[in-house]
Length: 304
Image 1 (tube, rainbow, N blue to C red):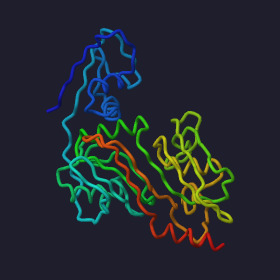
Image 2: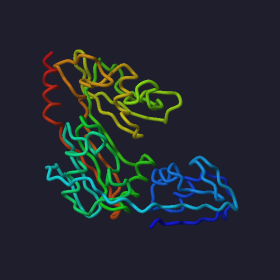
Image 3: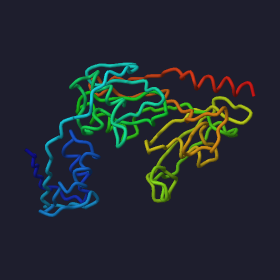
Image 4: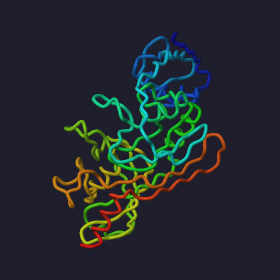
């Protein structure tokens, strides 16, 4: 049975309805509330409203929470590299080629399938049956550290940290060209590509995206860099580095048509993950080594 929540705006404020509801019900993420609004489950004064609707003193808000769908994604006994695990979180070292969650045409052999087998019923249900526990994603062919929430409280806490840019995320990458500056800050908005729905692009009407780039080592025609994410837009690093003239080695979407050493996938690795633990409030910090393919490419570049 669906749950109906009723709110009365008792303060003299003017605020977006999605923000108002998420502030009142901290157990739900703002993205979850926005999804309910998109599905027509939020009413202000008995009328369906969009997320940007501004509420004011005296308004009556109704929120219909649909009965959650049972998770029916297949649990599969797939080995996963667990860096850390407790009752609230799991830190995974994701390998190249593994999709994070099921999608159309790819319902099996994902990280979620593996997590469902490993965790049984201990995964956050906030993101629904397709993405249980998934706080943030990394691309199929990007390797490295990912966090997963094992309960809803942990998921809300970590999602809030992510939204407020309070999670440390550092990536290592190999890019074409010799980056001249030791440090580059890229602050360019990103949105869906206007002509190719599978790609993202720097667009004036996009969401703000910030990436910091620091040079680690320069080669004859490439550079090894560390990239710090301050926002988490889809394909952010790949789009940003291409936008300043340094596409990632091997990137099949934003890079060159033919790649050095016949590389087929981007050389990008999520190396550092730091955050406050949702229960203990201790500061957690994880750093892992580079995958073998990445180090071999570096060795080849050093010989050119």
